[in-house]
Length: 264
Image (tube, rainbow, N blue to C red; front, top):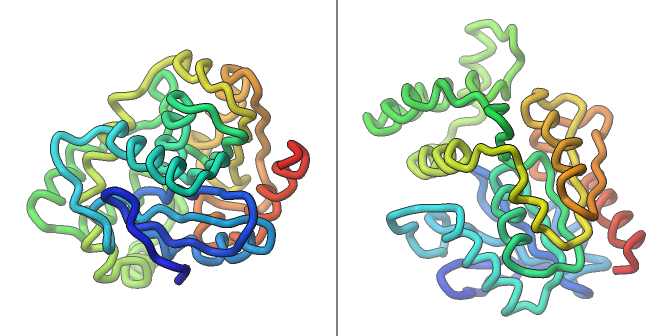
């Protein structure tokens, strides 16, 4: 774990030295899941990983909830640390994009942001998921989430599902599950043609993985056309959890290359 400090209502884990980079975790993720990514960047940057509300030492998440509550926290971290580069993963990428709408940045990088364009993010399973969470049936809710989000093999057998859930679903995942419905509801609420993102002024890089379901990567070329200074890349062999689990070193390399290209 990096050095821990509180910024407003959120805890922040800090690694390394150099120009600042703020990292925003995704749904069902904690700051510590990005330790390897932060460590890989720490030789050239000071990396500040946000512990989003409702997690760890951060304050509880209040109601009503919206993505803008998270944006307020991220903007506070950017101001406190003097950082001008922002990276977001999954739902954290959605937060990062909306932060980019409110503040000028030197660079904005997102990996498979939770953006729905013209209904691209199918949330027809959300009602069933919400009922299970409300009833405290968290393992069943996780199964519904993983199937609906296509984050396990499409033809997985019942045995594989059972093994996967046993491996993935611990106490921490159980504690985070009640936070998920409101985040998915924001993805649905913010579904649009994407025109709002034309207001992002920062040089922006959209990244995705070749092994990720197409609904998460298919929006990237569209977003790259909408955002004025944007590029995108689909990385061979990577999946949705590349930044936090399967390939943090490669994602760090992509970030470093992009920032060097920008002279940051």
